[in-house]
Structure formats: structure tokens, C-alpha cells
Amino acid sequence: MNTTPHQQTEPEHERPRGRWETGRTEAFSDGVFAIAITLLVLDIRVPADGFDNLWRAIIDQWPAYLGYVTSFLTIGGLWLAHHGIFRRLRYANNRVMQINLLLLMAVSFLPYPTRLVAEAITSDSAERAAVIFYGLNLLAISTLFSALWGTVASDPQLLKPGISEVEVRAVLIAATPNIGFYVGVTVLAIIAPKVAAIGYLAIAVAVVLRAPGDDVPSGKA
Image 1 (cartoon, rainbow, N blue to C red):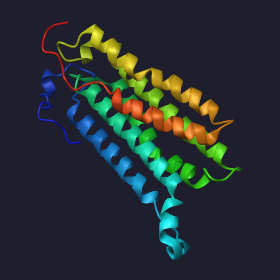
Image 2: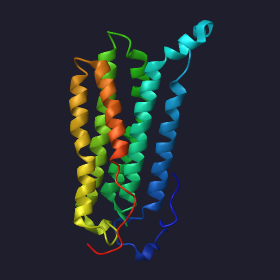
Image 3: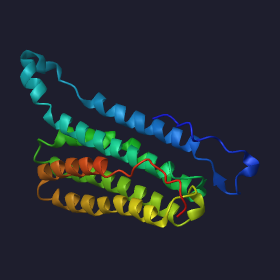
């Protein structure tokens, strides 16, 4: 998740007013993604009394494994898509920087509801609240990501030469449907929390598979 060689810092006097170079922003974002995705595994543990029957105790941690895989794939897919966006940017404006900061805040928060789901999914009294809370965090992440690319799309001067309107729309279309999916699955969590938890995993897999590519066309739009 390091800054790629093509992202050279542009001399300050050559950069339009109100524009930020993207190399440091992407490097900072990559660091947040890396920390958030690493924190997920710290919540997987076998309780001390489980060592009397360790294999059974390991199997009993299935909610933690489910939460880990779902959140890992969600953050990983988001990182792929985030890199796809910044690979296409020549500059970032103030609004892009602000939305990106909010997005990183939502991503870094994800380990907390992930742990809540892992601890509450087997409790009839707590599983519904935990899964809904988790879904609201995922919905916030998806909404902020869509807003990030929507802001970029509204200011074509931020894009590198050769990025066509077709490509802009394709990335926006790839990001936007996740909002509807998260809304639907979060509503489902009200009546079927465990099914909704599996639904979040399915969305996470789709996010990874549908992440926009890294290639930037060299021709003109």
C-alpha cells in the first residue's frame, strides 16, 4: 500500500490554486486502511477456559471469523476502489480532501462494530442491535465513497488527461449500488440478523470483484 512511482509531487508554483497533490493523501489513506485491516485480527481470541477443549473453543469462535473475513474483504475492496480513484486524479480539491478524511474515519471505526457482531451474534437479545449497528457503519462508508467519486466527477479538471466521461460514469456506477445493497441488508437485519450478517459478507465479496481497474487510458476522451 505504498505510494506508486508515478505519483511525483508537483512543484507548488505549477499547481492551480486550491488544489492538492495526491501522493501524500493516498499514502496517508493507505496507512489508515492498513492499520484498520490489521486491527481486525486482534479481536480473534480463545477465552482462557476454552483451553480445556481447544478444538471446540476454536470452532466456537466462528462469529469472530465471519466478522473478520467480512470486514477484511470490505476494507480490502474499498482500498482497491480508492486506489482506482486516486490513480485517475491529477489533483484533489478541498472537498475531496474533506470527504476522504471522513471516509477514513468511518473505515478506522469499523473494527469496533465488527467486534460487537462477533460477541453478540449468538445472543438473541443483542444480535439485532449489533448487526444493524455494523450495517450502518458499512452504509456510511459506502455513502462517503460514492460522495468522494461524485465530487471528483463534478470537477473534471481534477482528473488526469485521457480519463473519458465513459470511464467516470463507469466508476460511479460501480460504487453507487452498494448503498442500496447495504440499506436492504440492514433492514433485513431487523428480522433476520444472522442472514443479514451473511449478506454483508456477500456484498464484501462483490466490492472486491467490482473494484475499478488501475489502468489509465493514454488517449484523449
